[in-house]
Length: 346
Image (tube, rainbow, N blue to C red; front, side, top):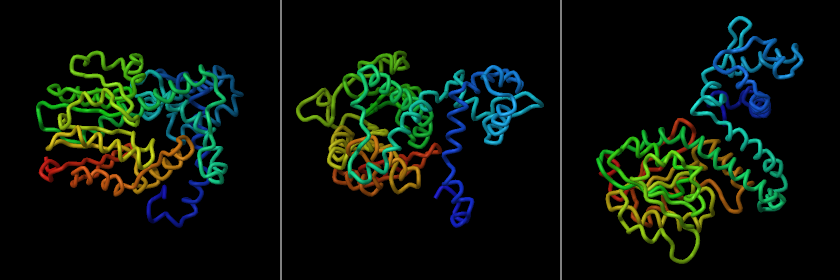
């Protein structure tokens, strides 16, 4: 449930579930209309703001008042200012701006419209093969950008939950993407090195991971497809050579067979006393994981969110018998796994 236990039978709980679309509609409209950009650091008077946005004044001021009630704006006299939340996530001048995440959610609405058809068909029905190559390129850019924006927020939470005491070591980041988790880790641990592992086209996409440039002397690139058969650059990483191996937001994209293969390959690279960290959404950690499972149903061919015990069982067959679960403040979960219990006692 989205509500507290004592509210589970309340009409409010029912009402909040039923009308959740109104919240996201108001948020997305305000962002797309340019409300937060127009207000910026200085704030704006309501008539000036409505005129600049092309809104009829009376209706526009009602909507601004609504945004204030939702905690997105603050009103000081007749002047509107950004709330702390809006200033951090919804204004482009912030380092934590989530503009591409908002654009990505707009795209996802199309796939969620296919939920009924997907349930009847028993397989993914939302397809992208009607898009031109340029449209696909733009959609991929939006997706990668959205993943980067979220990762920048979650990276700090993850590494706070995974204490590292060793002054030196090697991090293997499997499915690095933009490198947000890798960059945050290396900045925290200047004596460590890292292996950037992702598809060759992602590793080669320098525009996606510009922030790695300042750390490039401590980073080794590894372009490969871990789900493909045959030798790859992943084989050049010596077995049991990495003190910390991270699979972040990766296993939910595949089915059980592929995920088991990923866990196997990651475990093989981990040192005897190293940590294997699987950061993701899980189906048994609340409603967020359950909804993410439906997101995977609609937008991947066999992806899913897994119950923790299923992933722990995969890891145990590779000698990782001990684990800790860390729930992150932003909603995702970290499974920290080790072969020896004393490693988790740090």
